[in-house]
Length: 183
Image (cartoon, rainbow, N blue to C red; front, side, top):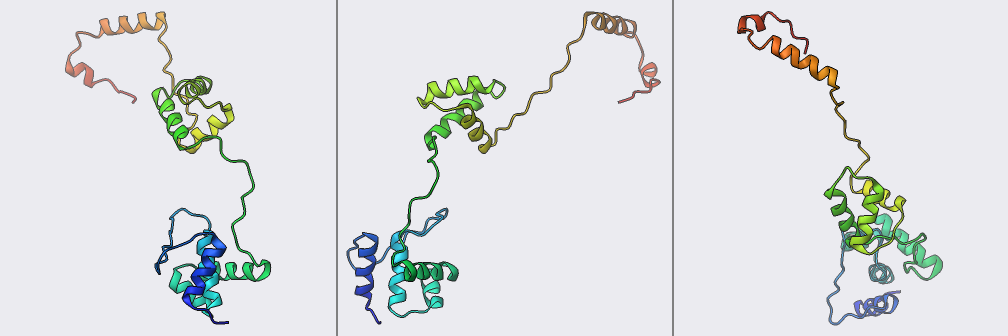
């Protein structure tokens, strides 16, 4: 069955629900898009109905041949190739909330996660659980790293160091050179 380009455009606009004016077809290619839009799938089906081969469709539209074959096979089996909603719960935090969280963590990285959560909730107005805060912080590269604490010097150790310094305060350079340092 041979179709003209106008028939392809009519099929594409009918199946995708998008109406274009003129002969130009603008295909938006997002770099991080995980799936083709309904409009792009409609173009593939239109090319297929015009009698074009998989290789030609793939080279014209710059899609992998496996993607083109999958769309055509799905259309032949079910008669429809629209995108269906994905399973799973939508994310709680948006892009703005993620930026606020990153800012709150960077203010004081050593504070406990409970305080970060409280400050985040005050700053953003979103109410989220501790697990959500932890997961998002981990995704942004903030991991639970405890700062190394230098032990405090005891009073007896302080007195011993002071006595040692006073005893060696008048040493000459030659005397210091004779000491075997262990560091």
